[in-house]
View 1: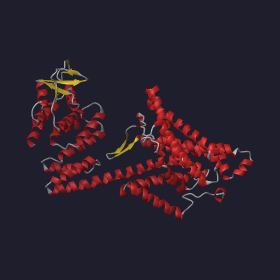
View 2: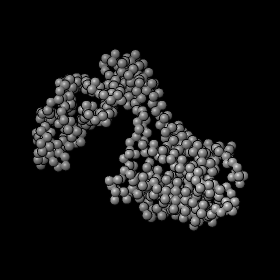
View 3: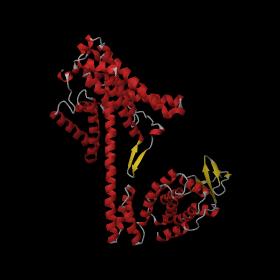
View 4: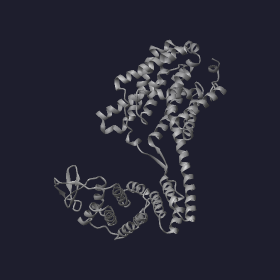
Length: 524
């Protein structure tokens, strides 16, 4: 291994200028024993030109073939000479080259090494991540060249960490000590792995102490990333619970209707989003990235119309009879699930994220916030603000509050209470549809989608205080964050049980929830 590393390091130092790929180099890389091929690959990387990079990419893609003593790149049935780039016929006796896992790993590292000098910063960043797990002193020369040439501070910092990880395996004690000091400032899980691996084989007491100190500091940095990730996950879950519970805050909190079909109204919104996606894929493929903007009002309208139909046909006859309402809406939920199965099938369907919701915001080495979650949090906040404005600042909101607080007086003043009931129930159902639209962006959509959220949403409304929007917000966020922190300690199932127990104890001590109703509504 030392001999092999010496040869590769020597090859990497062989000339600073690129030269054309030669047939002899091509043959040496694809034919022979693994050690010889690795040395030839290292020499080619040290003096690489564009054709060398293309050839190594072809090796990674398994597109390099051999026919006798001829080596060629074959893509889509067409052959290319790796040296000249000219198109050549593919011989009938063409065969794949044979490469073991070690050789394939060297191809990946070689390609990453070349990308360290790419003009594209994204490719350079990806190359650094690839090299993070390969702390090999034979790569030191090319890493140091790239470090000198790098201009982007973030990539330069990561590259310095890769260099320190390489130095950690050096035979020079001073280099290893220097490396431990540099690596201690990292918060990268890969660096922790490198330190742990070196700790197992390190014999020098001073270096071993340095590694232990570096591990403590890296663990502390990683712990902060984990805490922030748990808080973000809790807020993300809380925003979804908030969207689901906002509709219940109207239908149950304001109107007093125990709607067990609320989850299915959310499911209708999710399937409406799926249907809009299909229409865009078929008729407007060029505008697919914007299908979600069209799906939001469609999901709201689909669930609101279904809610209005349910209120006018069933629920309006059951006001003031909670047990009958519960049973009737439970039966309706089963009917809606079967209706969806009949139309879309029993299997889950996939709703794609638009490209602008893909990826994430990287804040730390072990912390990336997905864009789809960030956007859903912002969407939940926008829906909440819109609902607060509608209930508190509009004529419809005034009528809804008037009817729910004192129906006889509102009727005496000329308010059509039956119509307001329908509007309010449709509004709550439409918000459930918006929740379904948001949920479709973080998971698959199926007939049972609503069943996983109906109990949690009722808990949010009851915990926050019946009829209190502010309490709904506090309860949703509190339950989301508490649930995620408990998951880290106890697991998902025990966390759910613990949250339920906490809610039961809280309701026993404060039956009115976080915020109690005031005024005539409380007296009623």
